[in-house]
Amino acid sequence: EIAAIGMIVGAGWAGARAMTTTSGPGLSLMAELAGLAYYTEIPIVIWDVQRMGPSTGLPTRTSQGDILFTRFLGHGDTQQIMLFPGNIEECFEFGWRSFDIAERLQAPIFVLSDLDLGMNLWMSKPFDYPDQPMDRGKVLTAEDLEKIEEFARYRDVDGDGIPYRTLPGTDHPKAAYFLRGSGHNEQALYSERPEDYVANLERLDLKYETARGYMPKPVIEETEGANVGLIAYGSVDPAVNEALSRLAAQGMKINYLRLRAVPFTDEVHEFIRKHDRIYVVEMNTNGQMHMLLRLEVPDQATKLISLAHNDGLPMSARWVTETVLELEGGNDGQ
Image (cartoon, rainbow, N blue to C red; front, side):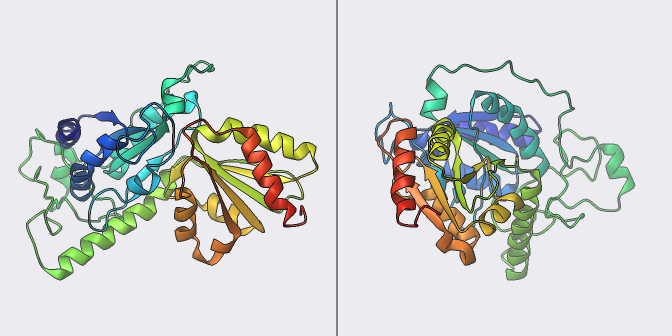
């Protein structure tokens, strides 16, 4: 596992598109090099097929228990980007789209599937192959370097937190390929100066904000007159859709947002603001996405209600239906 991520970090630095796959225990071993890729700003893709933990856990059972761990994977102030496919078509789509996002943002991208999606047989529509060119991001060629006065690997030229890079082998005296996982300034030179460190972390924070605009938008299903919302992600989607149909048959109006990425997009903020209460359905014990949403919108935190269920089996429509009915009964069914 350590060698696997080490190889894709090296490949990403060299200009190749590279990914590796793992599950929870392997992700634990990858933490240090994931932090290196984050701080050196090397584009890589890691696909985590989540299974039951902690430790070895139940290796043949499904879960969504790696959310918090992945979100902050790496010591220090590290913020990782996550994608959540909800079906097999999206698994294929996010497979290629994650590379575009990684290179555009010069960052690790984590695609979080789960054992239910990853190891079961699913029916699927034919995959749609991309008809657009690859997005390599901000890569300077020798011709580009000839036009600029100076190249600095970690300088924010465009005000979006994303610097420019050159690929090894670019034949130009300004083409610097050096990266640094220790403290550094704009030129990638070693620095312990507080102002250099603070400026670098603030730029990385800005890049994380910029990333919101490149994330797959959530899928939203709305019913006129509903003031109750439900948020879910990943393979729980079929169970949630069936549960919503059952609840609708009993006269209950609920709007549904399926998350597809972290950092959250503006649509997620708006969805939370316009509902009186929102149920967050997920397959883990502690309500990890619920926690992230509360951190994101602390002024709306009391609206968010955790519906976390984690027994190793895929989410069931019956459990979602019965739990929502029980809780809504305490809210007079409004």
